[in-house]
Structures are given as C-alpha cells and as structure tokens.
Length: 242
Length: 132
Image 1 (cartoon, rainbow over the protein chains, first blue to last red):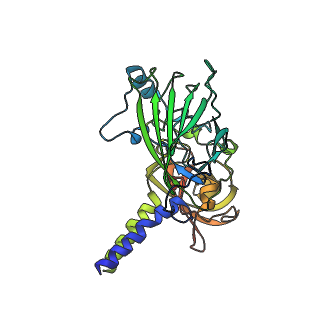
Image 2 (cartoon, one colour; image 1 turned 180 degrees about the horizontal axis):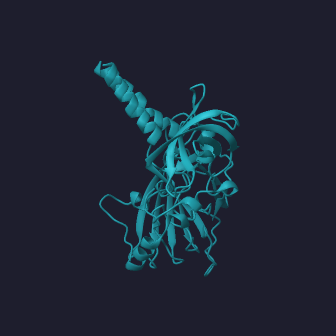
Image 3 (cartoon, rainbow over the protein chains, first blue to last red; image 1 turned 90 degrees about the horizontal axis):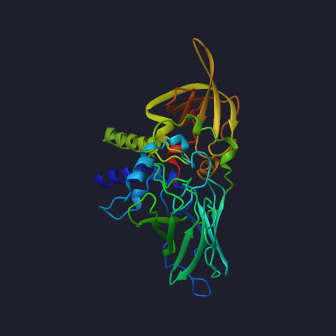
C-alpha cells in the first residue's frame, strides 16, 4: 500500500515537471561528443545555462554578489516594468530566457541562436582576432573565443548598460567584461561559468555557474516577442520577485 | 485510503496549477497576484496565437452588463510543445477559466485552467509553467 501511495505521489509530482519541459524525451546520458578536429561538440538544442530570475542562484554556496554602494542604489531603484526582458529587448550576458537555444560552431565563428526573447543571435569570433579598441556599446558586446580542452572560452567587452542580469534587476555598467566557459559535461548537460568583472557596480570580479540541459528531438521555433507585447503596461512595483 | 489518495492527487494538481512562478519574459509576481484567484465563465470572442503570450478574450455577463476579459496563456511555443494548437479553443466556445487577477485592477488574468463546456480541460500549463 505504502509503495502504491509513493508511486501515485511520484506520478502526480512528475506531471508539472513533464509539462514544464514539454513532450520531449528525458535528456540522454552518455559521454560528451567531440568534433572531428577534437574540439568539443555543442550541437543540439539546449535550455537553461544562465540566470532567469536571480543571478545569485549561480553563486557558490554561502557567497553573495559583491555589489558596491552605487550598484545597490541602482538595483534598489529599478521597477519591474522597465526590465528590458519584459519589453522584448535582449537578455545580454549571462542572462538567459526560459526558451531553448542552439550553438552553431564553424571554423571561424560560433553563433548562439536564441529562440526567444528575443529571437536573436550572438556572434563569437574564434579566428584569432582581438577585440577592437574602445568599441561602441551593444547588447551582446564584442565576443572572441577559443577552445581549451573540452571548454569554449568566450571573452566579451563592449556591452551597453541597458540589459539586466535577472528579474531582480542586478545592474552593470559599460565597463562590464565577461569571460564565459562553456563545457559539455556529458551528452545531456552543459555548464556555463561566467566571470563578471564590472568595477562600475561591483567591488570585485565574481563567477556564476548555471547548467543547461539538452532537449533531444527539439527544434527552435519562431518567437517574435514584439508582435503582441501587453504585459509591460500592467507590470507594477519594484524589481525583485521572479 | 481513498481520501488519502485523493489528497495526494489534489496536492499534485495544486502544484500543477500553481507551479513555481517563473514567467516567460516578465516577472509573474509583478503583473498577477496568485493570492487573488478568479473564476470566470463566458464566451470566447477573440483568440490571439501570438508572442510573447497567446491570449484569448471572453465576454462575461453579470447583473451590470457584459464585460470583455483579456486572458493570458504561455507562449505559443510552450503551448505547442505541450500539445495544444491554435484550434484548441474557438470563437464562440463557452468556457470556464480559473486564473490569477492582474494586480492593476484591469480586466486581465493569467489563465491557469480552461474548461470547455464539455468538461474537457485545455491549456493546462500557463505562463507560470514555462520551462525553467
């Protein structure tokens, strides 16, 4: 009887999880694949790998985000309605939308294709070029990358200061410099470690780690956020709650 | 025993309909109040299978007149991946909606459970249920 009860409870608890993930099969297990040249192979459709609601969820246990006084002031002043994400603007780095994405690797470029919010892409140069000197600021910045063993390392500067790191409104300035380390731990798991260095609003660099999961059998779908955005006008109150 | 089983099932259903608030592109808690549940009965007048949220509108009659309510669902992508389509709901359908009211007092709500006149539940999984 007890076993049956546990079975029922587990089955019932699994429903929201299955719903949340859609109707795909569970992420597969097995070793991480490699490209013919030995570099890690990030192919597949992924979900997660960055903060959605709260950047602090990516901090090591017991550590808090080292905002300086000005960063705290800016964060405390933010209103939910002004979140660029709510207004169909890009997430920037390292924030992710709760929608799938795909990484496309070529010998000279890596592209990250985002299904949602917004339906956009990042471009990472892996052809050995350097950052331009003092680039004009953009939402995704200027990214250069290289492989280190099983990891793709992406260095980005030239961000604008408009995107938020999460629903809570963690801020940054144009001084932001990120170093992301993408590692496919196994067939179904990718970790993204991002070191955030922004002396404008933080007292020291810090690193957040988020995990993404493979969504086998999925393809990216169209998602044009701007076509019928009605929420921002009804969103109230300070940024803070997911 | 039956009561316990029913209790477990209800607890699970509660999870299913309330979920962990994690809206798609905006803070759920900043727009809707999950502590203000609402049940609306009406006729579907318009369906928008659009982003960032699919929406449908229903005409609800009460003693003071007929009012149009704007109901928010998840995005079409999330709904499609859960097996729903643009034709799941049709203009003229008589439905009952359970959801959370908008905080600003407008005639808007986040639809959690939509029940057709036949008793069939559709769109289980609102924007509170988007993938993490």
